[in-house]
Length: 137
Image 1 (spheres, rainbow, N blue to C red):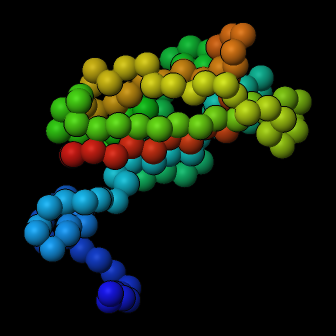
Image 2 (cartoon, one colour; image 1 turned 90 degrees about the vertical axis):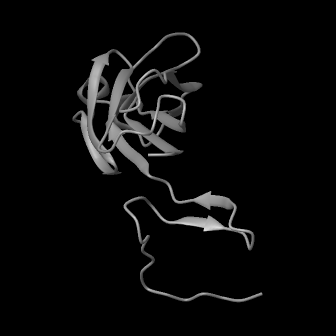
């Protein structure tokens, strides 16, 4: 086994670096898109992106529903997958409740996803929302 110790890894093309086995088969890649944003629940926090990579904007569509727009579209609507986590913050507490479901509603666009957050009883805004997407761009 060898250890590689470098300061920078670059792809010779325009895409992100990939990891290959000795046969040249891709066995992994870096995350292209991630975002941490505030849902603006009940005015406790201002709606908006806290930090991100590969995300151009987040749109507040409805209570607990958001569209995340990618800086670079994926190759097709079926060429990526996303995971998400959200946390409800009641009355300014530090993460009083984890939500039961943050979920992606639609993969119908290569350039964005639509998601919803909420509890088991109702859709509601959440103050801390994280989304990570990987795939082919």
